[in-house]
Amino acid sequence: MKTREKIREMTITALLAALLAVMGMFRLPSLLPGCEFQLSAPFAVCIAACFGFKRYLKIGVLASVINLISGTHTIVNVTIAMIFRLVAGGIISLFGVNPVTIAVSGPLGTVAGRAVLGGISGTNPLALIAAALPGMVFTAVGASVMYPVMKRLVRRETGALTHS
Image 1 (cartoon, one colour):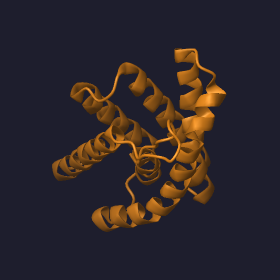
Image 2 (image 1 turned 90 degrees about the horizontal axis):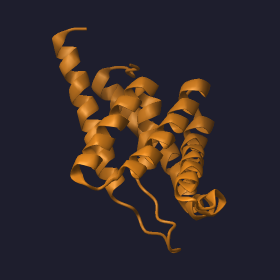
Image 3 (image 1 turned 45 degrees about the vertical axis):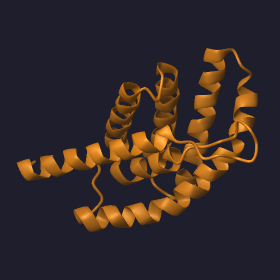
Image 4 (image 1 turned 90 degrees about the vertical axis):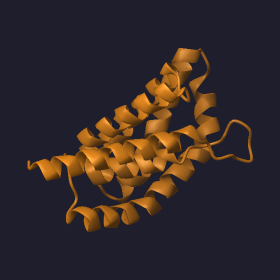
């Protein structure tokens, strides 16, 4: 890989990590208390679909480091985020990029994250999953809408999808 290509890849990775970190800092409110959701979830699914699992994990780890350093996340937050990333990215990696995997990977990642959170906190995971349902619907719809746009932007910038 040429130096120029390496610099471009590092820059895009850093930019996506920063965007993912900032999106992870904010929660969009819901009508029901405790049911807020993050814009970072559908964005993360799109990153996994456009850039591949390996690069998505790099971006996610960098985003988590940014959130830890900035004090907006704790180790528990990062643990849950990494569970989400492993499940959502794993589904896309194993079953390919298609409308079904784009729609279900984020919600399934959320279910896995809430199950782990229930174990960590001693809370009923079903209650945590029920509270996350509006966010899971938002993630499924949001990722399905965002993916074609992001795919076009990536193709325009790189000439073809880059899988690392």
